[in-house]
Length: 216
Image 1 (cartoon, one colour):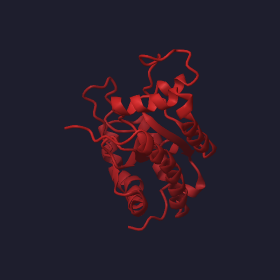
Image 2 (spheres, one colour):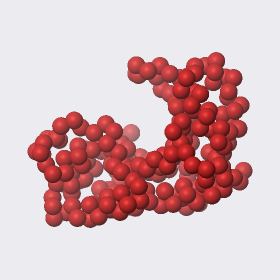
Image 3 (tube, helix red, strand yellow):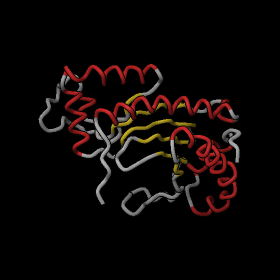
């Protein structure tokens, strides 16, 4: 299936799901999800594959076993490349539109230690600072979700780069929102452009922090 754009009803689908996150609504709207949400997303993933590698689309069901929130369905659809503690590219579509992101979401202690060493040492920080500045100019910021609430062991709370030292995810993101270009073929070039920006971060991480396959 050739990618011709995302479907404008995809955003409305997730806005409605916010209000009706239950099996009855999902069952009634499953054909709509397959045709207007997942179908175009699969075509987009296929179109991105030649440049960024194999792309996986996440299932729509939430794992609620250990969550206080028992809503059965995710409030977005997402796709991701790579994995196993290497840097990945990520794209999400939900009620608020598109989000492009990427990096290492499950950093190992060794990866975090290397990152913190670079962020801490002014002699090493220059290249990281330049990379973050370049990404900021492209609309990306560091993901601070799940960051530590205090300084990691061995670092001062008043460290000038404490916001970086607290990170547990080495990832960046840009909210693309809801725009008219999303509904046509031009969306492919816009999303490629966003993922190429993510590649700047992924390349820095690979070179400076490394990739460590998760042990099984």
